[in-house]
Length: 108
Image (cartoon, rainbow, N blue to C red):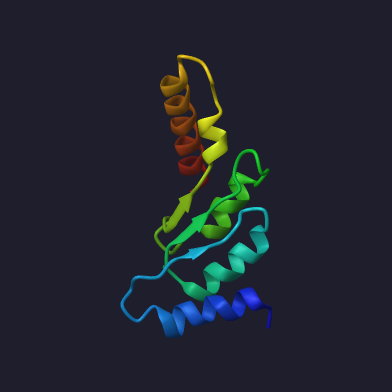
């Protein structure tokens, strides 16, 4: 059994007794993300790697969503923060964030 599956099982069956656990799974490995989702069910997953790191958003959403089509916190820090370094930073960051949100919702 790969280590990531062992850890996912430990979170699901041993560590999450109070419902306060989550996992972090990079989006650059969507097949592994899908396998982890199968193991942990509806436990939340933080997913870095969208944007500059090259993760595929559509594959990530399809692999990472829980039984309700949710359960993911998709992170794109650099993709949002470095959208602009000018005086329009806040507007540009908001616009990029809304674009990402809309794309995520499209793939749900």
